[in-house]
Length: 374
Image 1 (spheres, one colour):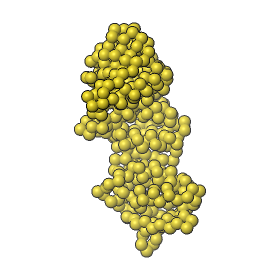
Image 2 (image 1 turned 90 degrees about the vertical axis):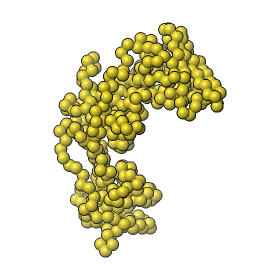
Image 3 (image 1 turned 180 degrees about the vertical axis):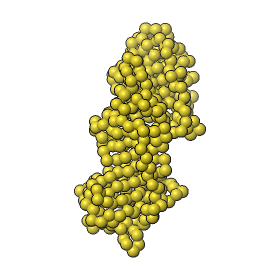
């Protein structure tokens, strides 16, 4: 193999593929990236057996071939090379090593046989559609903060995506994530071809890798393919294929309150800043902040035997009966960060029931937050 690539293009591609590779691997070949040179350029492939990323680069190919090299080391080398340089990759026939040359810099990396590298699955997936990058970003950004990290409830370790006929808004794709303490739900218009998609749970790692790819996609359509067990996303020359979580997502609609009749409208940025200030006093373990809501006013307070107490008052649009309710400050702030408009609406029932939080500028997003004792 003998190829020459632009450093910037190679670095971008390696950044995508090397993040799939686990730092600690019991299977040595999974620490490597597969580099394949052919007539159409060079493809880089990395996998952890559940998630595979393939990126193809156009470049000057003097001779083809394939080799595997340590992914993180290769990435670090290219990252530290000067901007604007050319990088030559060649394989040493005698040692089998990968030689990397750029200007006066020379590196030799050990390799493993390309035959040992797991073959990426190329099977056709039955459901295929295109979705706008902006819609896909919105689905991920407004839900992934609520993905559970509790491994025992593995079916909550991802974003549940499924088709839904939403009545007034017509057919949509709905994305939902919950960790049992909070729930995030967002909808985007149904793309052509997506009506037959099954309900799927996209794992946390795949969600993170897809989100990185979307940063470079602008507003271009993204190709998505689905089956009951796999998802494939194609973005700007990068193909990501991931296994889906094999489990049943709970009936989340049962935990979305339908009869919360007490409405509180509040300016979101001043509210989140006040929560952040008051929570400085709350204990690291509970992060509890109390909200006392009455006519036209809300009082945020926190008490800690170690750190003292704090309170702050804010003007709000509210005219119902007085409610005292406690929340985890971190969860409140996570939801506040998703509110794009100036105003957020809290729909409450009482101090012991879940609260619904809405973005008044985005009817497609809904959040549910469980209260806590304070």
